[in-house]
Image (cartoon, rainbow, N blue to C red; front, side, top):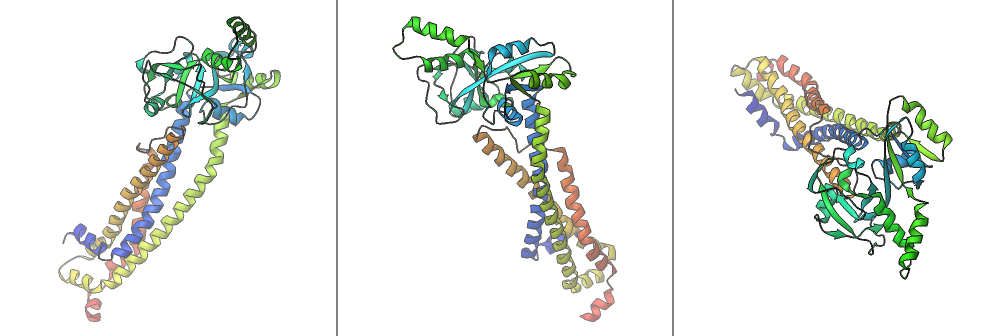
Length: 407
């Protein structure tokens, strides 16, 4: 007797009950796997975008808003800060590197960021075409921006005012694409990078009248140069000890604000963690219900197949063989539920990643193996074995003479 083949046939002899049990198991396992995969992918996305940034310095406001706007480019910055104060901070003995960022415009919803070459170098960005910008109004496109817009080196585009789609175009100051970045899976993929002077020039032209003479324009630029601002600055410490004193120095002695990404992200994940705990609890309830459903189905199967069990015993099947038959039915369910549950979980995460990418948000991949997924098959087989244990023991202890007498 081929136990695996016979148990498979027995399993699908009751298609509706099997489909229901399978659905419950798949939902429970997929929910747990989704939490594991999504949490892992979000953590990885945060780690890639943080990439050694120790503190973000910007205008007074919400520290969380400052981190989301400056590191992940998911929020609106609280305001601008004077360039002179940022340059003074760059000379602070505890600062190893200060990267200025200037925001305000977008290209089809992708943010145009005025900065220095230190910004792409910080993420180890590589060029697949062209070169980095060397003059104002030259721009380098991230991989996602290039794929979405189709722009190539040498082509021009106009930025639009604001950080989202719908702002007025800066038609008088077009940018020229000088290079395309290779995909890095980090925040640079969805950014347009240019010189800080580019952002200043675009907005200087907004203040200039159309009939202004060259002398008047030069005088205006000189007046604006004394009031130059940037949006925020990304800072790396010279020593880990600076984490204790530097943010306090900024927050208490200057008009600026310092926000530590590690602290704010921990706080953000703790708030999101409530939702994941609820989803885990729901998945656990589904698995318990699925286990009870499998148990009831197998228990009823033992009662319904009394004649079949008697025939198997008459043909020489040992009691352990009959018990194994029931156990294999549950294991078949576990295998199917495990495969379908993992596929469903990865598919949902991949769909979520596509939706986030369409909104210029975190880069999340749904088709990467997560170490925690190894517990999903263990849990599936554990539920199956526990559910099949009592029915299998009942099949093992059944008395063949009583079965024949009942016939």
